[in-house]
Image 1 (tube, one colour):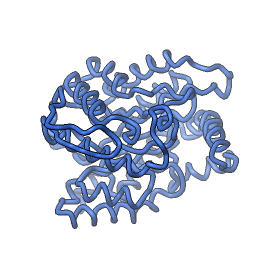
Image 2 (tube, rainbow, N blue to C red):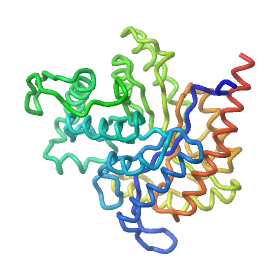
Image 3 (cartoon, one colour):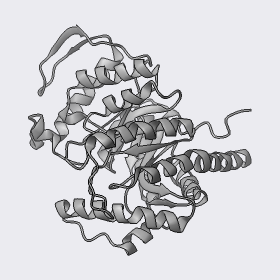
Image 4 (tube, one colour):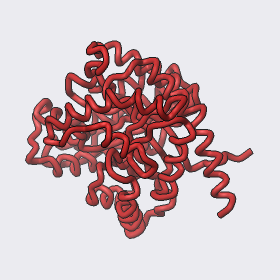
Amino acid sequence: MADPAPNMEIGISTFLETTPDPVTGQVISQAERLRDAIEEIVLADQAGLDVYGVGEHHRPDYAGSAPAVVLAAAAGMTKRIRLTSAVTVLSSDDPVRVYQAFSTLDGISNGRAEIMAGRGSFIESFPLFGYSLDDYDELFEEKLELLLAIRASEKVTWRGGHRPAIDNLGVYPRSVQNPLPVWIASGGSPESAVRAGMLGLPIVFAIIGGMPERFAPLVNLYKRAAAQAGHDPDKLPIATHSHGFVADTTEQAADMFFPSTQAQMNAIGRERGWGSYTRATYDDARSLHGALYVGDPEYVAEKIVLLRKNLGVTRFFLHVNVGTMPHRDVMRAIELLGTRVAPIVRKELARIEAKE
């Protein structure tokens, strides 16, 4: 039997939050959160999910400063699931070491590694690694150029303004996949969409507010840029990353996910000057056309199918969790996403595609 929806992947993304539990006030250690992540990846693989992504952050409220290490720890314990950063903050990293870390992961996992390259949603890594925010855009463009050169050729000759030159030197180990997948991550910048399209790279849009369909013009911009550069836009994967949670009932999911989400959104909001995150804000975002995917399996599946119709996405990341939640609850959400949500989505998409 053919795959009922060969172009739709569903997975998990996380930043490995270590914030205070909003109910108990307890703070999980970063070591424990890392060990929990391995269990989550193994379960995601067993539940039939397609991909698991770990974000890179350099803050006390996240444990994921080295995504490739976390993913490699799970690689030998999993069989099928793809393992990606979500994202790698390429602007403040060394593309040689990024490639080496993920080509090593690719070897350990026998061809399941991916890199999601972005600027990141926080700026702590820039001073930590000695970079100036004045070079924010230039750093990303230059380092992406080098990363793509490394994955294209064993021997590299390259010169730029923010890293020592490389003169016909080899970078090892080489990845099992040829080429090693590199995605561009975007929070909604037209420039990022155009860049990804022109380079023929798959793109991931972070949709964490508003209505997901508002990203349709960016998808069209991405596809036009790809076509103009000579790439087939129909062959380029498009992914989205959104916050959400799955439980046995929608009411249960909504009540379980709200406290940690509110606490984390308000903590970040205080840094960025956002308004207060209220239950009304949250409930509006849970609506059918909102950006939160919170509910029972049938409701979350319905929203993912709608996203596919509106944006043509080929991969969906559910970001679990936002803020700290009990590990058992996160594990149950992952199980439901893989065993209940994904089959509903694939069956419905197969039905729609059969009618077209």
